[in-house]
Image (cartoon, rainbow, N blue to C red; front, side):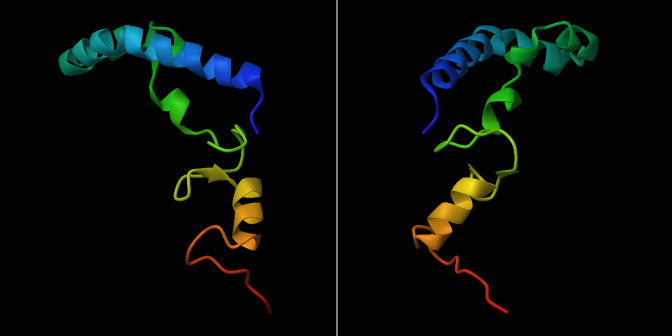
Length: 89
């Protein structure tokens, strides 16, 4: 399970994304990419997406299943992901 500090950090990032969403949309519509680059790093919504929902891990993220490889392996071995089986040689 993800640490409480990580979850709180994600909530703060979500607030920042919501705060700058309207301004980002205006800058994108105008094609002002220099203005976009001057906004805070956490204002981009893509910073929130690549994180495992179960463990909170950022690295080795599998977009198709929306989880980290470690969580994927555990859930696949337990039979919790439909259509995924362990390969054997």
